[in-house]
Image 1 (cartoon, one colour):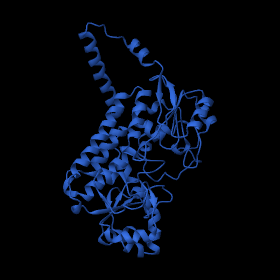
Image 2 (tube, one colour; image 1 turned 180 degrees about the vertical axis):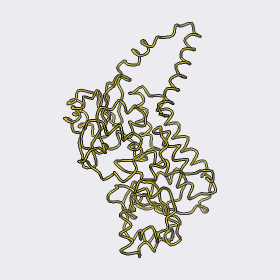
Image 3 (cartoon, rainbow, N blue to C red; image 1 turned 30 degrees about the vertical axis):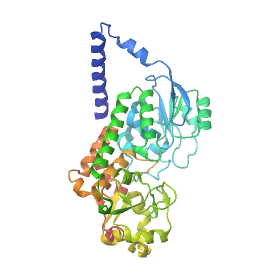
Image 4 (cartoon, rainbow, N blue to C red; image 1 turned 90 degrees about the horizontal axis):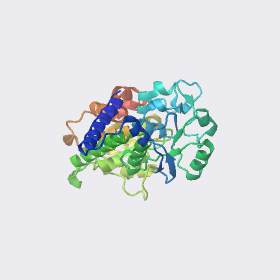
Length: 395
């Protein structure tokens, strides 16, 4: 797989450089066994919720990931072949399991679903699983647990009960662009001896962010169309009223947000009256694919509210891929940011083809080009597109 090949190549280069440096200084190069012993010394790391945990980098052979997003983030950095168990929500071979996300693309599931389906259960998982299932985890005989249950007391208790390190991850409010997400990738890189891989991915994300921002900076505020984002948040409840005044993709791409005065940041629901009052200033509307299933019946029942939106009436409604399904699809957030920037400022992004960009990003994150598979999911509706609101919502 490309991801693994890149890791091997990086390791070979690094080994060559180290060997040359040692010989140049008149020092005998370490043998493979000596290097391995040194790499497997116990160290203390601080996880993403501030817990100090002793780990032995490179020593783990049976890994279990629990909680929303933990397996996804692990798969970006470490080897899925080390997994000893999987939550039922991520095992599509099971009949009885949470299935609310099966219709939406989760790239890590596309890349590794076949392998995951062969693993034992480490718990049910899913939005209704509010705590790790210790007995199920123990049955997988893990030597380390990667968790996304961000409660210090519960994580300490789980670690004591399991008798193995429990490492808590965190991505932060800004997802793929957040310092916490970068810290999580670096932490995983340290624990699983994949520092080079973590550095490659974090550098790529930063370069992508900088490139988008560079292309869109310096545009006069008066020359910027005003955009509205909707369909954010929980997959089951989101609709056209779920928005954010600090949507990170807008901020990275220097997009003017029509929503500015909600009083607090983050995803939240606005009132229908607020949506109508903003309508005349909505030049462009972006709709997360997660919202379509809920918006369609609302539109079919009453078009009045939607008719208040300038973007809706002018046919400037665009579909972004669902970024949230059993927590954040981080690679899709990055893809969406490129798409938003390209849509709002087409002259600045004429060279960007979204299928090619999607393949590039998924290959970097997961080692595979997944555009076709992502766009083929029922709730992707064929991929990034300008929506014909009349026909699209009346089907």
